[in-house]
Image 1: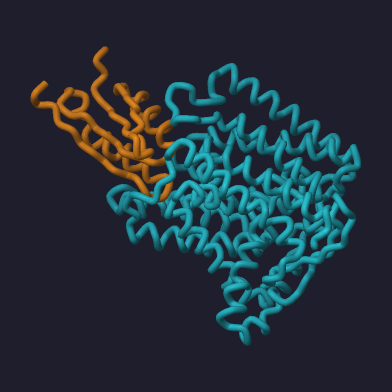
Image 2 (image 1 turned 30 degrees about the vertical axis):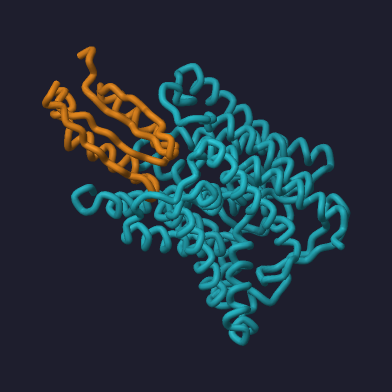
Length: 374
Length: 85
């Protein structure tokens, strides 16, 4: 029988995931779209919402830190490497090809999107492929370490309070300007049950903060994709599985905040700390989106999904998996969790997302419209 | 109005951002006929963002836009001549 602290953590994370999935479906809160549409349509609406999310999460994390509810930087965040930047470029490219990031594919799959489910399969296959080269890549990763400090606060000696205050005031100033010039939301047209992205951004920041208070870390999902790949590989190729170091180590040692129980975790198939932290979120996000789309009667598998798109989306999933592995985390981990605490690896990752998404938007336009559309 | 034709474009089930890209291409290809009032462009989509972005783009080009949600759960965006022109 699992400890009551574990059960409570799982329940809270499932709740956070469920509400997040519901909200993301309502607003179509697509982070791949946020970066892609900046280049493809010169639209910054979703990036504005993302910035609001980051600033709100920064304030909430800092308050939780001051209240003694979390330790900052969060455990698992690592010192920055050049691979953080390269991972961002790869991830940005992959997520635009996939039409959704590692969480976007979850809420979209939940609402019946076949492209999203294809991308999810790509993510799992990509995670399995990464495990094959993990031992070759790992020494290179640490060789490109830029500093031993994890956050800007540690690097500069300036308290996180001042970083957060500057960010919050800056975003508040911008948001006021967007509001006054009517650039904060689209009011004229909307789908049924639409929630303005900036509202979803604020609520998501609250949910990430609740998740961090209950689990000690911000939202993350990609280690689970490794675990899914490991589970399948262990079943199909048990001998080969036993030779893969990534799947057979438990590098995470972690104290669960709600019970102070010591848990270990790794990328293998075991039901360990990563399973406690990520499975409830994943299940919650998918089911939240199922609930929202079913309520609106919009759940559907229909439509023509061309083969060229199937290949592109699947490849995008594989590329995203590699990007997140070499950057020590995905976009959710870095943007919703790392940037708000000014983690340098996360900032590098976000810088990398822009050129990656730009490149991805060129390719996806070709794939969708063909040569004449480019 | 007996010359009024309908052009249906079904973009359901495709990867993002197919809806907006294909819709914009369709509008551009049929720009004259829509402006002359001889064609109604109907975009069928299941993408919730497209229900915001396609009407906004068409409206900014000076067209009239109607959105209808069908019982099966998808949206039909009708783009027509702006009668106020």
